[in-house]
Image (cartoon, rainbow, N blue to C red; front, side, top):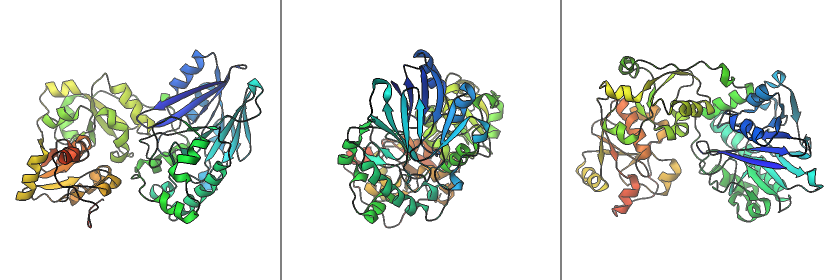
Length: 474
């Protein structure tokens, strides 16, 4: 048996290629939209991808299952669990087998037994793997998708927080509790291969280790330590990460079937002379370094450095309108790959970063402030302070005079921030607040970025308090 692990760090997404070396057949589990890594791995190991499957209808990235089927003719094995609202709508376009509890998927001598594990989503399934090529009759591992992670479990609230289905969070949590009870009955030796690692918004407290075992998770996974259902429900629904608004769009896209990458229109390079006017009416993201942007940028543009683009683009981009980019030609292919991985296909064009700089369009800047300087400015009442970190970070401790406005919501809530004095923006170490500064400056505020964030504030031995009694989260 061949087992290959793929990890997209920008999405904290894990996927797998499982192959039978005797027959040369392989299946891909939870593929991302860019399927080239799977095709390359199969070729390198003399295998043909004959199947593709996914553990559920993903909300955080565009599935590559249909892309693999289109490019290779692979059969798709898709969940037939859950209610009608959570069935796939594109199964008639490909060779598809709909699978349910106790069904088996065979790839040469590899057997995958389907286990219905609802909770994160109603249609969620896991795959228990047995390698029969060496005569083994016992399973060796389980692909858990977003059901059980290393150190955590999938969040059950997305149908409510992303799709607006009232009451589904509590129901999903109770389904998850029941699924966990089944997981506990699995043999301790089984390896656990999840679909996400640390940094994913599909759960809280995910570990950074790529795999685990059932026995280890029984002992140390915080979500597996509850015997009382209501105590578990209270725990699992508390302190989940903010739900990116694009999750609802991904659910619909992966249910109906995304466009083929080869069918997407080319992205044209635009004349820098168009940029200044365009930035007044459209979202234009400058993907350059935050330090360079702070020093000089085109008025109206938003700064999200390209290595952070996937994490924040889904919060900022209106999927119904075109997005424009300021970037280097060298980084453009990877930037487009990242955007397409979360379904942002409507890119209206791009401006060359070097050309924009050379023609003198970068005429705006914003200042930075040291923590000790901020303290005196606060005491004199000459600035207001905005903390743009996640709610859980804010609750763990914040600067007493700060108000909370989450970065992901800032495009919508910027107008709620008073403009009677300069606004200092702050995060953990200065990266996210630099993005926030660009958004607030676009909205007309006079902004200053706190250099080093709350980390620098603490190092200066300045006061930090617990949860505020009143805050604005948007």
